[in-house]
Length: 136
Length: 385
Image (cartoon, rainbow over all chains, first blue to last red; front, top):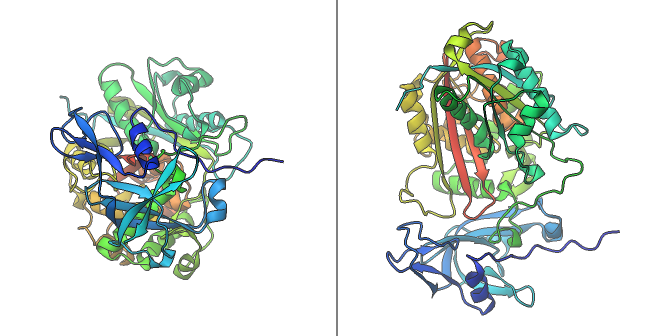
């Protein structure tokens, strides 16, 4: 009766477009403040630390550690129901910001806080790559 | 700056029918709860000249929601706003009402909220940011799962300690004829309950609740003319910031919500030791652990043992969530907590009554846990005889 419900893809904003473009080209980039050096996330016109608008889209190391992790058993979106149980992790980057994502290449019951991880890019469409993580 | 401490009172509290109840709209429940609060206060609707309503987010963008509530109630307020602080709105609306009355914009304010979780004819909103939803990270559950994970990691809280919150609140709900979840629950049943978002179990989570609540704020002078004992607002406090994912604030080491605690205690001129009972915002059990620390009843790491030792039930050092909380009374977005706090202050809580209950803390929490960065508001009130 209904078509398959598709997983929602990121819909970039004016602020986030460079983040997603970089991801599709295989790079993790975030804004580094030209005044105070703070690497900020999510993307924003102003630095949350010093309110400067002066920033460059710096390429980051792509390395971090698991800050927290959960296993979704009861999906809150029908497109993800077949994936359950699946993980959602928060990665703390070497450069400081924390971001949500999925850890791949690791059994859910082997995930630990502090586990070293590195970025991988999962091309999910002709113009979009999701930012995911694997153990390093 | 004027000090509003003790100048204003909550004179009416009420709820609609609530539970899993199809067939009544968000507006319908809002009107039902508002009428109950008017009846409780012994006020006619003509007394209402301020209306504050929490955004029913499940219905998406609703222009002029608070003014529409006023129109459906048949009143024409001189002050109104739709507020958007999620579960922090109930306490926050009382604080805003006090300020608006003090400013002379109005004299008696209705604060209310209700929701129908499966509204007919409304396109359901998918919450969440581009940095979360594509990873299957949808809604508040994942953030609260992360918060429980970090609490267990940092403080060593055990499953049994979270279970004690759920089991204790369930026992409290059995003393509340309106409660949604009253079936007896043991710690073993909690520990056997299924994962929702591990480490959150089913019984760490409040149920979905259709329905709502309301309260009415006016001056202590007007309150004294009414039939019920006066429940004065001694303190109000708030803080608003990003949580867990993004330490952008310049004061990232501070315990989230502690600024709201400083304000509520500072305005009331009391300390945590003075509080006789507390209604802590508990959409999920880790919230209770957090608020026991943020509002300085426990040092960091001591909340789990504090609950497990029985301090938070009737006869304990700090009876909490005496009507069952969101987890077992039902998710009335904090208006249930305000109703119970007022009843405790009035001495109307029946079998749940905390003896000599003179000071009651109510906390709220909510906002945009599903956005980037996950952003929440803390709000609190201290009520007094």
